[in-house]
Amino acid sequence: MIAGFAYEALPMRVRFASGSLHEIAQEMDHLRIDRALILATPEQRELADDVAASLGDRAAGVFAEARMHVPVDVARRAGETARRLRASGCIAVGGGSTIGLGKAVALDSGLPIIAVPTTYAGSEMTPIWGLTEDGAKRTGRDRKVLPASVVYDPDLTTTLPVGLSVTSGVNAMAHAVEALYAPDASPLVSLMAAEGVRALAASIPGIIADPAAGEARKGALYGAWLCGACLGATTMSLHHKICHVLGGTLDLPHAPSHTVVLPHVLAYNQPNAPQARAALAGALGGDDPAGRLWELIRGWGAPVSLRELGMKETDITIVMAQVLAQPYANPRPVTRDGLTALLTRAWSGEPPA
Ligand code: NAD
Image 1: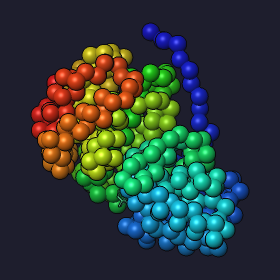
Image 2 (image 1 turned 30 degrees about the vertical axis):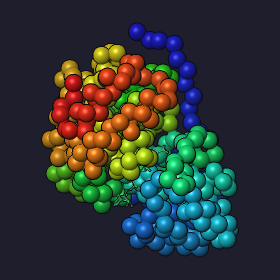
Image 3 (image 1 turned 90 degrees about the horizontal axis):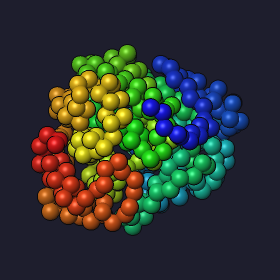
Image 4 (image 1 turned 90 degrees about the vertical axis):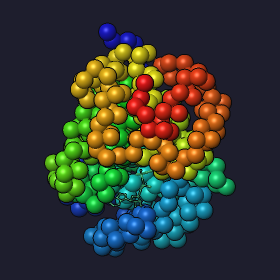
């Protein structure tokens, strides 16, 4: 059955190929960026330096101070550096934290961003920005921060540690799961969601077996692209709300929190989302996608409890209060009892129910 829908495509270019890092200069030509500031985390400085070296005098400089949750002072310094070096664009090489920094610079300056993702988080496909000041994270949507161009080079993901590859992959799947039952779901996005989940689930075992495996890395990044596009196209629900509180208020790590929570939210929502359930059953196998996902995650050696991520049991009440305080769309009404049971299971590491 096809329900009525609305769909709007986001204006951006995507290049996907092994070795496409070397095509950044062509993207700069296309976007008329003559000099670009390269952004990275301190841990990925070497990669940023390599990009700068390959661009010669078209590299305005390297700013390798990106950090989780985009602190306002870091964003300000990155913006000042771009101005001082007369950059006409930024190249964000890294995961969601680095691409988030690029978005913060774009929000303030309007400079175009070329994103070169090295994790599966999906920020490069969304117009969503986030900034942290005095411990509080503000987020918003603005077309200005959508990267003008995304260069996916699977070769850059071979250095992503196996543990983070798995949790980042499940983080990507979470976007697709919630897109399938989103209030603004639509057929094209649902196709991307099912295919994204399938591609990631099929590729993760190959990455665990050999982190440098070319085909598995390609498959996972391809899945991450599709899942990121789902995040950019739809409104997220209970899962993302819970994870926003876990990261923003309790400072739990982003991708592992998504990994622990997703099967539990899916188990809660799938009775009220039959089309999403069918699509995910097709992508993951079996007829209980939530249970299947939990088993896969456990088999991949990823965390299955919030307790092992450092959360205290008493923190459940903090998460409850914040999740219940704001209304948002969810296929199944979020009740106090339902949420308590869900969070208690996720905290202790029981299978979803
Ligand atoms: P991250 O960007 O914080 O990266 C984690 C660590 O892994 C960093 O030290 C990084 O340098 C390193 N790393 C990244 N890629 C690597 C590679 N290929 N090899 C070796 N090391 C590598 O982690 P993330 O999970 O990608 O991003 C999380 C952040 O992104 C969160 O703050 C989250 O809120 C944000 N995010 C935003 C959106 C959005 O649409 N705005 C979407 C998804 C995530």
